[in-house]
Image (cartoon, rainbow, N blue to C red; front, side, top):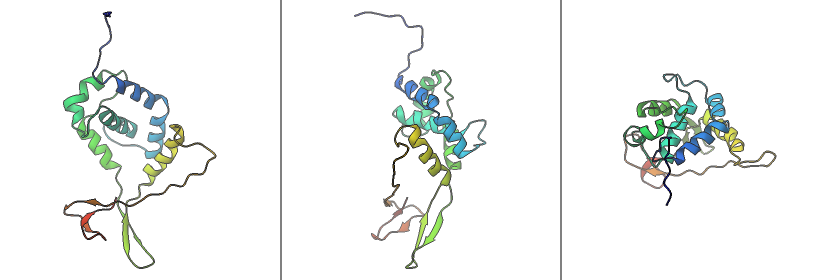
Length: 167
């Protein structure tokens, strides 16, 4: 076994530094900021907020508070990485929400959709950048409804006779 002396700080979540570097170098930050506009959150852009969430999830976290309790020191060691607090992350995500739109079917039944045009445009622009889609090919973007069952105050009765959300 060879022992090496390292002059750099070694962090427990070292793999996240490569993911953050790729996030910054591929142009994703520019597309996010151009698609979503100004965030007006204490000098942070939407790319900072989305990068912060990626950092949490790719480091094994599942809630915003993990950034303070488990990840802050490791993420702060990455050169050029801006570590946001959990409150800023949550405020940023809340600013990205949109109100629901009610659409009436030909049978007269009303359906509520939450269509976020900015996020949809961001998804379509980022897919070729991240090489998940190729130019010149046809893609059909389809969605399927799924019921998330719960008993919160704003839940609605579903066609399956339970209460829940239809995201």
